[in-house]
Length: 241
Image (cartoon, rainbow, N blue to C red; front, side, top):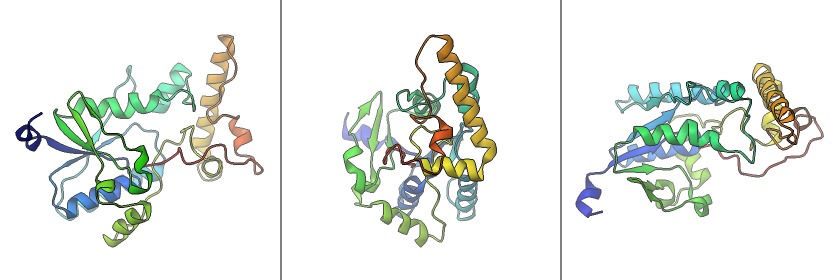
């Protein structure tokens, strides 16, 4: 690709509504970059994420900035990740991770005008996770790493702009949520916890019919995960952007 072509490539920002992507968005605004931020609304993030995105949209418009583009996915007739998973009785699990691809990555890639740059919210503290990638006209960029901004630096950027620091973004049925998040879901969002439990039981029933071994959303049964003496099952794989 020639430098002339690179100069004409559009910048997109993969927005998740979490600490890193909010900070990255603010950083790019401060640097005067021309970019379009894109968020996929698949209906299964924590409610706090959708509330924050709505508030951030208001802030952007009030300050004369371009609003975030909201995409609604369409996967085999479904635009809601939970509804899709329940219909096919296939809850996400640590070993089956197609949900992100189908309900986030593919809708974004379909929307992008290629060739283009896509800014990813991996911070300097986790630079080992960043992969240099140029695929099908999409080249990844990592502005937080480029500017040596770690997680705490992200929070400082957000506070400096007079905004509250958001909750980690992520689905409420994410298999990589630590036990404390499942306990919080059960305690504060009982309806959503019951939906997750229903989905897990539907998946177990399907696997039993197929003669397969049980496969849980979070390695162990959810009712065990939320018990008070349950130790965390996963480390930092649940990293909202």
